[in-house]
Length: 166
Image (cartoon, rainbow, N blue to C red):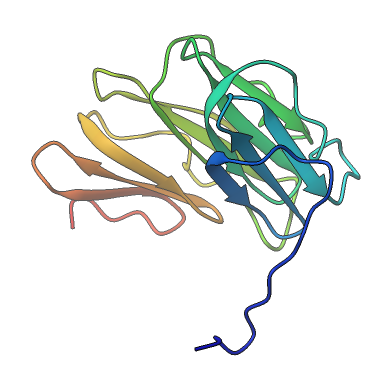
C-alpha cells in the first residue's frame, strides 16, 4: 500500500548498497557498503563535498556534516563559522550534529568515545557543547541543545532546553 507523500528518489552515480544515511534540510550523505561516502543536494558551504576515505557513521546538519572514519577519528566538512567544521582529535564510536534553525551559523557537534565520554565542539551560545560529567551510551543533537542517555538509563540534556536528569 503506497504511503501518501512518500516517493522514491533516484540519485544517479552512487554505488549500490549502503550502511548509513544522514539527511539535513537541503543535503544528504550516505556511506556505501565499501565505506565510501557520497553526499548530494545543496553545496553552498561545501556540505555536499565530503572527504575521501572509509567511514562507519555520518551525521548531517543545515550546512555541514561530520562522519566517523574507519579508524574512529572524526572528519567534518561544510560551514565552519562557529567551529563546527573543526572536530576534536580522538577516537569515537558515535556522533551527532545540530544547527540553529533561526541562525544556521550557530551549529555544533558532539561525539561519544568508547568509554562513554562526550566531547562537543562548535557554537556554545547556550551551553550545548558542555555535557554533564556522566557516562553515556547514546547522544543526539538538535537546534541549540544536545541530549544523551546515561549508563544508568537517565536522559540528560544540555543547552537551550537543559534538564538534568529526566
